[in-house]
Image (cartoon, rainbow, N blue to C red):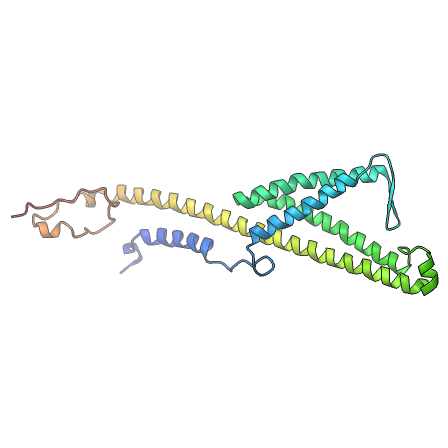
Amino acid sequence: QNSDSVPPSTGVASASGMAFDLEFEHEPLPLFLGSYPLDFGVQVICVLHCIGCLFFIAAASSVVSTTVLGFELLPELQVALAAWHLLGVSLIAAALVATVRRQAQPLQAYLYYLTATTLAFIALAVRIYMMGSSCEVVTQSKLSQRVGLSWTCGLVSAAWDLCALCVLAFVAYACWTVRNFKDELLQREGSRLLLERAAVHDENLRRKLAEEDGGRSAAPRSADPTTWAVPQPGMQPPWGSVHIRSAAAT
């Protein structure tokens, strides 16, 4: 049997099956903290991040300078940080809505913002480590004079370094979680579009083949009623489009 006798619907079915495989046959998603789905994990990350952004916005002052870990934050810098975190609040709100509506673009924008914030925090962590090496985070006090400046400096520097590493590990894990969930949504959107195109192509191909095979489909049937249900050679008409004749019961 040559290739021309293969039913054209086989190619359509294989295209639909390929789209079906793209959507449903993929590697299982990792779980957030090993127990929870990724959408819940992204929502938790967004809520915690929003609380941090609101703290920076509320603590900012446009008049008074403040000093943190030896850094003097001028009013202009505080306003800039508040504006950056205000932008983060809007992106976080969009990301929360995207987790419910399964939209990838808001999560993509939030991932960019979270990555930029993570890079800035890495620079701050390096600065904290350098300050700890030079004992800039410790000031002279009666306790440091009694036990020694080196012991106090080492203890305080180790505490700040440990806190910075813990926060850095959390933000890196947050970026990884958001990226995985965003990639999953992009994959589902692409497979859904492929399924829709395959369905349209399937319908157009069936209509075209039905028109080309109209002459054979309209061929007269045998007078024997027992042969009326036997399919004729060629492309079969769609289900329900041809009325099935019946013989009178005797």
